[in-house]
Image (cartoon, helix red, strand yellow):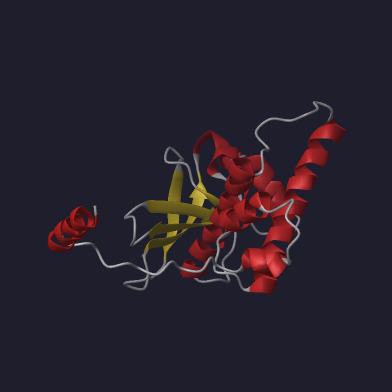
Length: 205
């Protein structure tokens, strides 16, 4: 279970642990804990800290178990992430990768909200909202499957726009997915050619 940092509830996380389930979340910067054991980290992996900790303070009774704290620094952005998990059988790098996969889900919902008109709803009832969301999900899956079958070089947005523009055209679907032929490049007209053309026009006149 991958959980956003804004939804940390130690009591709930403990109940998840008691159900023999695993979780990965981000530890809040103001979290109070003490380090029970420090583990070695591999240089160059982006992992700067790998520890076994216990939550302390008023919330210690909510989750009275050993937890794992992993600090990861993204080489591309330089941003540091601190993860909290009850998983001990995986490497620290694998913990970071697990949470990284969650970002793909965020990008998925961001794309849907931007391109499939899901910011506003036509109805306010539970059934109406779910119906519109399901339609958007089906549209996304159809586009993704179409992109997979056609091996198109277009991204999802370009694919969607091409289908929108040609939705009333009677033409094979594969023609829509084919990139438009590139126009031949013409050599730029020089100043001498422009003057000669003007001189010829004057003589003809």
